[in-house]
Image 1 (cartoon, rainbow, N blue to C red):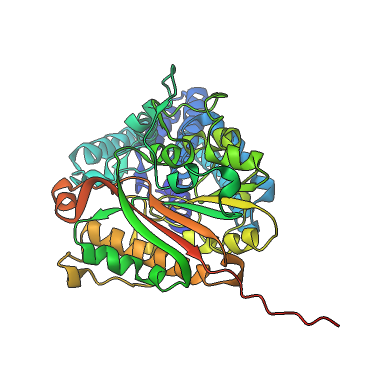
Image 2 (spheres, helix red, strand yellow):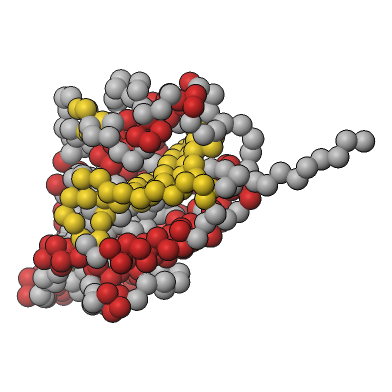
Length: 447
């Protein structure tokens, strides 16, 4: 129990899941008790590292182990809290290893064997959750009372999602036009000088039109010279939605780290050539979908990811910065002169739609016949919260005269497909275009 309490405390502080007792430590303890101290030390260290990686993977999802070393480069620039946390974890691992070896020398072999067998029996008899949303994948784990954290790490790293990062061969094929075709169809020199493309995670098409009207109500109140809405038939992952809007492409796999060609006709690349300052923003880490590699090739001068700023807090639906905390970055960008294009991929309406990310409740699910404890309700509350915050930011002086296109990446991903079929179109995303009014210019008097 003492060998587990440190990681339990860390998990509680940072808000991730962890089993009460790690079965692996009992194996190392038994080996040490029976005199195999060198083997126990090696396995004990591996078990501790696996336990650490299970926790880290829930905070910073990384498709490849090499991406973790990239993240470690930013530790010197992390907040004091995160630096103390990193140092504390290193010290904790060292103390745990020493404690395991000391305990292994003192405990009787029979006692160690009894403990190991009791934990094994508990592990196999303890019922697992039937809820598929807790099924082990690349960033979420089941948390019964006793489990092998080494096995948890294995199941996370064996997710079918990660298999897409192992594929090679052709990366792209021509894709359908997205909402950004409103700009793409024009000669670049004729579009507005200030452009914002916002791809909203899981913004599909509610079957009840009144729901969509309620979500967009704050945006309808923005003084605008253009206000258009519509829907796009689309089926795919987030990266497919991105490539649809940025490049009119579709990806055949997620392994884009070493892809050098194919981005030549992307919208940001052509805007960059026309003299625009191009910036991309996303609250997750830059390793997801290899964005830190292919975004510059698609034409972005500057990138803002989770690791690039010290954010006020971390959000939960998907590990990363909170969208509402990123809103001021728009003012900073568009408050500067010249031609400017920003692309922002949101994050906090990602499945499993965690209401810990909800700041203000703007949506009453019961009004539209949707149960409060459903995935649909959680998603709609989070979307309404984001649109309200975005609308407030678009009222600022810096955002006047900006041509804004907001579009969903894909239809909501839900475990309960029957619930989804009742509330959302299966293969459709919504979009909206707003051109905010220009700043009013006061007449000047000649002296």
